[in-house]
Image (spheres, rainbow, N blue to C red):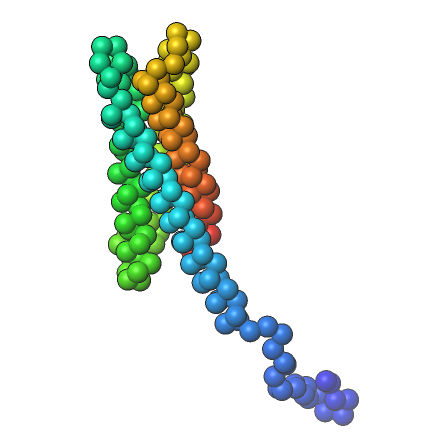
Length: 182
């Protein structure tokens, strides 16, 4: 306040009461980040499960004569993407379990965020692409009648689609983590 007789300014130095505790905000952020890591791990684990089933179903889809998956490029592509998806999600699950259990990062956090986002996006697009190429072939074959071969191919496509869904959700989380990463 300004004093009229001598031009001095008095400043009140008493601290104001704290309106919020900043440590609570940090703890909430850490809990949210930990929850996102665990949720992302769960999504990738489920995607790994479905991609392994897809791989095993297609690899065992050999029933002789024209009923061999390797006679059709669409099914070979679906198998290759299933193998690649299994490898990618297996490595990601291992990395995340290692980081959650030990607290040590294999990659720098910035590098891991970029790899997660680009990898999840790329693999998800490959999965939907491979399923999309195999569906018309399977539909044409099923017009002639259902066989064990076409049923197995349909199950493989379904498992690839489920794997796509879980990796697409993981890609959304990866995108959020990348955009909020400082």
